[in-house]
Length: 409
Image 1 (cartoon, rainbow, N blue to C red):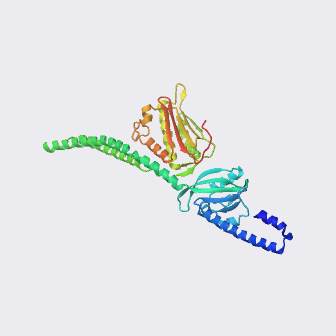
Image 2 (image 1 turned 45 degrees about the vertical axis):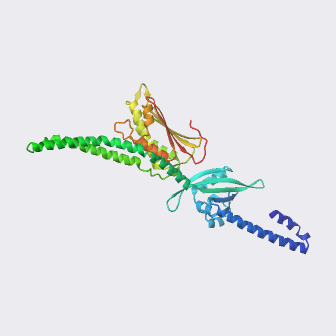
């Protein structure tokens, strides 16, 4: 239309009055049709459930639907006073604004990234933001930014993992029943002994047995009651749903914090503590507190295994070594935890994540069960490789919001 108007304008002085009137009438009709087309275009854009944001080749705001304005926190008042400023200056969600600015700086024409945002009500929503080129007559005219709310899908994935965890409750309950039988049996025996002693006393002119005799039995009963209470508390801890508040977080900073906490304790025992953390700022969907619990539990287990093998700090000029490494591979974020401690037998590895299975004298057998539940809650996986007498290697993998290529060394 602009080209046509430009060409006609150059020839208006050569047109007759009648030709000029017809031209104006035709132009008026065309403009009316174009206006109707624009209204239809606006209606289509508004009816799309995804947020759509159109920018020019310099990322200056061109158009957006109300969904995009709501998701990104764009104020139309800011748009009208932006004075041709880049669109990231109009977006309230800073991480998304930085993503678009980075796409502009690096001349990226196709990109996708996931973000977690907190609403005014305090709930967390998950957004997928995609940038695609906008071509007109084979020329790049700008970019279309699409924003999809994938919160429900994420929640469905979490629900599926929770249902899988519930399926394991049968085995857990069976293990609990077995654990309870022994203390109950001990309590029953000692109460029967006290009852018999009292019955004998009544038959012997109410002469009670020695004080120590009764106290010993009562002490055993009290110990077994405490044991039962501990079992019940551990059971409740194991079966309760993992109350995870999932957000997209950079795991490196969390791992570094845990490493800084444990490093002095390892070094105090003569154990070499190494970290090799990826410099790339990848983000994964986790609960920061629960992720830290998993790392701390596994670090404590490694410390105990190394101390068991190297009780005096070294054996035959060998010393304990512990390492945490991270990287990305095949669309997964990988955390590798390695130690050269006492290792585990094949039987122990096979039962490692089963409730109540432990090789420690004072262990509950629930620590690794909880680690497994938490990692599953993050849609992750744990793989264990261990050789008895040589050490263990734990590999934790978590899905990345988008594919990356950095490999583990």
